[in-house]
Length: 431
Image: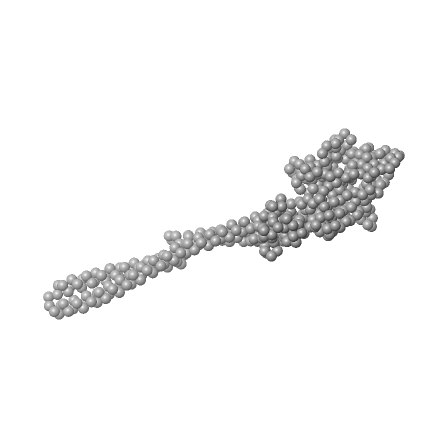
C-alpha cells in the first residue's frame, strides 16, 4: 500500500503546487523515513483541494473539447457546397475574377491574332501602318490581360489555400482540445487516486486503548470501577475517538443486566448496552501523549450470563489520513452469581483482535454495507439481531465521527468461534 500511495502522491503533484506536494523521488525517501514523510507529504486537505481542482480542470477541458467539436462542425459545414463561410465566399469571388480574367485574356489573344491577319493582308503602306498600330495595341492589351489572369489565378489559389488552412486550423484546435482533455483526465485520475489512497485506513500499532483494573471476575449485584488509557505511541499528532463495546454472553434482550458508564470529568454517561459507543474524543494527541478515562460497570442480580467481554480500540485521524486505526483489544471476564466470594481477582488480560478477522472499512463479510444488526450470543451461542450504530449523541460524540459497525457477518460474533470486527469510517474528512 505504501508504494501505491507514493506513486499516487507523486502523480497528483502534476495538478498541485510542486513546493507543497511530493515528487516521486522525495515520496520514496519519505516512505523510508517516517519523520520526513510526515513533514513533506501532502496533507489530506491539500490532496482534497488537488482533487477538486483537477475535477474542475477536467470539466473545463470537457467543455472546451465539446466547444471545439461544435466549432469544427460549423466551420466544415460553412465551407462545404452551399456554405456561407467568409473564406469560401472570398474564394468563390476570386474564382469568378479568375474566370473573367481568363475570358479577357482569350479575347485579347484573339485580337492579336486578328491584327496579325490584317497586317499580313494589307496591300499598301498605309494599310500596313494602320494594321501595325492595331497589332501593337492588341499585343499590349493581351499582355495586360495575361498579367491580370496570372494575378487572378494566384488570388484564387491563395483564397482556396486559406480555406484549406482554416480547415486544418480547425482540426488543429480540436486536436489541442482533445490533448488537453486527455491530460486533464490523467491529472484527475492521479489526484483521485492520491485522495483515495489517503482515505484508506492506516493501521498503527502505537495507538492503543487498554483497560486498567477491569477484573477477570465480576460478582452479580456489584459495581466495579476501572479505567482505560489511550496512548499515542505513534509519530503522528492524532485526534482519537476511543471506542468501547461491552456485551454479556446472553441473549440480546438480556443485555440490560449490565450497565457500563464512563466519566467525562463532570458526570457519568452510560454506554449503549446494545452496540458500540465512542467516549469523549481526545483532540491533538501529541506523540507519546496519554489520556485516562474512568469507567464503572454494574452487573445486576439475576443476570443469566456467566461470561462477558469488552472491546477497546482507538479510531483516529490526522492531517494526512482521515482513517487511522489502532489495534483492537478484547477482554473476557466471568460473571459470578450474586453473593459469591471470589477472593483475590486478577485483572482481565487483553487479547488482540486479529487483522485477518477484520473486513474492509464500510463492507461486511457478505460485501454489503456494514450498517446491519449486531448479533449477540446466548449461552447456546445463538445470535439474534440487535440494532447497530448506537446513538452517538448520547455518548457525547458527534454523529460525524468515524463509526465502528459491529454488524451482520462482519460483526463481533460472541460465541466460541472467531471474533469478526469491521472498523468503518464515516464522513469525517471529506469522504
